[in-house]
Length: 136
Image (cartoon, rainbow, N blue to C red; front, side):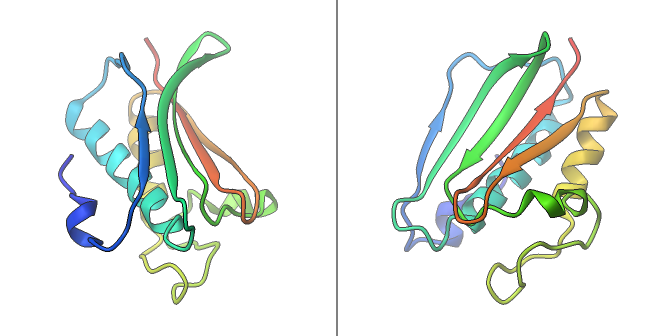
């Protein structure tokens, strides 16, 4: 990955679990951008959690390879999930969690470019899981 989150935030500890054997037939550069954005969000939104955890994995939903990034951070109210992937839309205050509001819109664009889809599940204070599919 291009970003080294440890250098950006040296004072934080984050427990990361990455599943073995994940594979996709996808553009490597676009996948890097997707994961940088999803992991960057997980890093940011777990910043106020004492025992921050992130899990990256893959499974199958309705026969489609489905990748996910799950965290135990701030989460969000799913009633506002329609705003998640729109550019410059934010569900949290910029003073609480800085950013431009473009990361998830970028993820959606890259996933759609591969013919997949992206969505999320979350609850306030209980973290979030972002999923995306890629066709075979």
